[in-house]
Structure formats: structure tokens, C-alpha cells
Length: 336
Image (cartoon, rainbow, N blue to C red):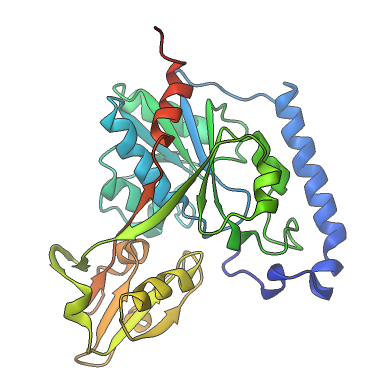
């Protein structure tokens, strides 16, 4: 994933069209690879438990991690024992490793550490997702369903459910890499099991999806929690009138900033690229000022964040019926 999205991905201007031949080649090769898996010429590995893939068709910022965390809670509430496999983007691990709660993001990646720290279920990382799944099941035989975080294009791992997360704002000019932000074309959505839509969902996109069920979701936060002492909390009202700095190294920093401003908070915005490796200088604020950050950034900044730093955790709030549909796809329709 690129560290920051080029501006021309948002429109079909000269820069995008100049790269269109490469986008056609990328699309052809990606489609060919997928068909080779579909026809069995390239082998997918089926693990002994159901696999739910959570992914998207564009790079960055759609809300996959909150959805994966929602899914762990939803499955656990219905008697399942989930585990998570992820690539471990931004980490340094070679091969496969289990991610401990509170682990080092430089070693395991920021999103896997966040999921291990908040999901309450085992998390394994590895570029080879089937190998990560095998290792997780060997170490945790109680796990009876796997969630493959950001695994839509990892076709070596056979899947039972494809949950595609869509934020239409991230689809940009609707062109494939490198001319646009798409890993796969919009038509790929029509082949998913279900779609989770955040924000707007245009009539044109609905037509492209066809009969695939679409469930709306929102990212909802509550109290702010002090970085490094998460049991200490405050409300937005407690922060109004203070000098606030808000930083975000996520796919769409502006979404975080807009949510804070919607609470009536006057902030100085500090956007960083997704998966940014923070330094103490990045988080420095004048004495008496307050620093606000995302949960993904907090796992990296906790060792050196200023004392008056607060994280705003968000969770996915999903329309009714989604969890039941996923369980039905895993277990089969209920019998009379």
C-alpha cells in the first residue's frame, strides 16, 4: 500500500490517463491470476475451519479493522470462537508469528497489535495467510472460525464468506492501480457474499453491486481515554476551550478530524500517511496543550506520547441482520 495517496487518484485528469495503459495491464494480470485460482490451475488451500475474509477493492481507509473487530464480537456473541490472521503490514516479522496484546508495532504491524490488544482472540500474522492460519489453529485448537483481515486479494486462502468493506470516497476516479486507487474493479463487488458500506452509497454503485446484500455501518466513538492509562476517561465537553492538536496516521485522516470537529472541538490538524512510523518530535505539543489521536496511532505512540494525550476509540455499528447472515453462510441455513 502506498504511504500516501496521490491527488490524481481523485479525478480522471492527465496524470491518471497517462498511467491508464499500466492500469489496464495491472487489471489484466490481476484478473488472470484470480481466474487461475478459480479454475484450479493455481491452488487455494482450504483450512479445517470456516474462513471469513474482510477486505476491500481500494487501497486504504475503508474501515476494515473496525469491521474485523465488530465481527469478532458478533461471532463470539453467537457461540463461535474466532481467530484473526493478517499480513502484518509495517512489521518486520519474517514467516509467521503470534501477535501478543501490547506487542511491538514495529515488529508485528500497527493494525495486528491493535486487534490483538482489543479483540480478545488470537491474532497471527504472515505474508503466507494459509500458513498463518495453520499456525493459529495448531496453537489454539479451540478456534472454530478464522477472520482473514485484508485478505480479499489473497486467493491462496480459500474462503467461505467474502465481506467487502466499501467507503465510496476511497474509490476515487474508479481506475485501477497505478492510475487510480482500485486493486480490483468495481464489478468485483457483485461477486462478494455481502458488503458493508460506510458513508454514501450511490445509485451507480448499487447497480454495480446487483443483488449482493448491503449493510450500512458507522464508526461510533464514546469517551476519550488517556494514552498509557486507558482506564482514565474524559468527554468532549471536558476538552472544549483547551488548545487541541489532533493527529492521525490512517487511510483517511480527514474523517477523524471531521468527527472531532463535529463534537464542537477546535483542533489543529496533523495528518500523517497511513502506517506512519512516529517519532517523539511528531507528537510534541506546547506545555498545557492536549494531543488527540486514533487508536491505531496510540499503539505506536504510547511509549513517548505527552502526558496529556488522549485516544478516541471507535467501533463499527452495523445495521441489523449482518451477523446472522454471516453465521448462516458459515453454518448453512437453519433446519426446521
